[in-house]
Amino acid sequence: MNTQQQTQEVTGVMTAPLTFQSFTVPQQSKWMKIQLSLSEKAWMMFLLTDPSGTVRLQGFVIDDQKEFIVSTDYTTSSYSSVPGMIQTGEWKIELMKLSKQDVSFTLLCDCGNDELPALHHYKLTNFSGLQDNGGFVLNDWNPYEVRSTKAKWYKGDFHTHTYLSDGKLSPEEGMESARNMELDFFVATDHNILPTKWLEDRILVIPGIEVTSSKGHFNALGLSSWVDWRYSSPDGGMESEQGMNRILKEVKEKGAIRSINHPMLAPWDWTFHETELSQMDVIEIWNDPTFPDNRRATEEALVLWDTLLSDGFVIYGIGGSDSHMRPTETYEEGGLPSLIGDPATYVWAEELSAHAILSSVLKGNAYVTRGPVLNPIFTFEGERVHLGEVITNGEQPVETIFELSYEACGIGSYLVRVFDGTRTKVTVLGDQGHFTDSVHWKEGYHYLRYEIRSQSDELLAFINPIFIGQKETSLRVWKDLLEKAGYQRD
Image (cartoon, rainbow, N blue to C red; front, side, top):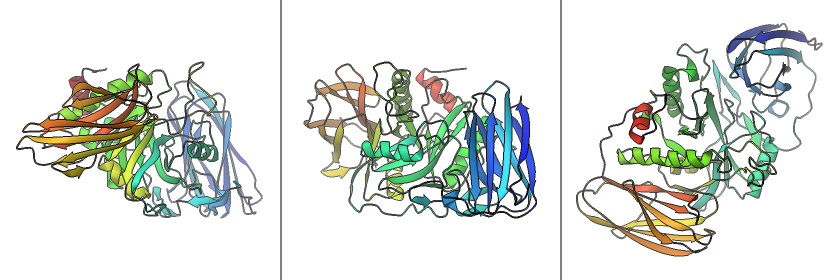
């Protein structure tokens, strides 16, 4: 391989989940092209590391072939690459497959010093720029950049996919879909790929990653530094109990929010029995409502959530479209399309910035909806209480007022109060209006949350709880939670 763009080819058959390939770059170059071809459709991931051991490219292939570019300029580099000079020395490619069948592969590697054309016709926002031994840092991403100074409910999606992994939309098409859904923010969470750039847009884009193992998926929201999820790691990475607990802790240390995704949606449900419940920040309660199996999985996730809340955990629910499809496609004939922003998570924030949005989510000041637009207000002793707030005065009986202004709920929809796990149908709602509910709390620990359901009992929205007092938790790991909720699985 040299500056005359001689091609190096590597071929093989993956019979094991993991294989390593290497090649030598004899001269420093401005760019490198990697083309990975598969003999059949299979989930294949790969990481390219430079001679210093730094991750320079994250790849995901499920089709026949895909080409990636790493260059000195982020405008000519792939979305999943870390730009910079192509150094001389040994470069390594780590291939990982999640599919069970054997897969033949071909790797073609080119390097060169001529000028490359820009990969995209639109303006890009660069996130990365600093390489780190073993990983990389999104040092050009500014979570404090303010897009709006208005305090309001901001509409967004915490779980999205593009063709960078197994989605069908390009980043540009995904943003167009998000604009059509009138989103204010959007978290890019492709499978095992932390984006190093995104297209510039009025919508606030927050980098994230869906850590995707064969035993469950979780989102790291607002992640600014790569985390080693590889199952070649000494602790087994994302495929072992020890490794996954380590990854969850590292994500927290790096300042990101950890969301357990579609926890009851088999075969992508969470099956790590030893996951420490204290290492979860939020739970994705609602995930792509157009996918038929999610109707059951969402109801089971609500039971899990209430089990945690009843045990004294202060933990909040969010939603994510997890959309992989084009806006014209549906899972069921005649069904609704799977769209980015369905469901949407509305977050109350003092401004539109990644820091403000993520901080509010960590406080539970959010609700999730498929359509109803809400303004939920709790008041306690005449003072407004934000969603997710813990009121420490639990030593005497108190009264809480819940006020809900609503629109686009649909005729026949109704409001459900969930108080300490007990569900009560409170009132039938019109398409729009205002309703007030009074709840008396006794001494001790309690929580209160609300749902809106359709005339046919389908979930339309849920509102995060408030709490009175505190309670020492008894559940420790995920297995304890499943057993307590009555969902123990092998």
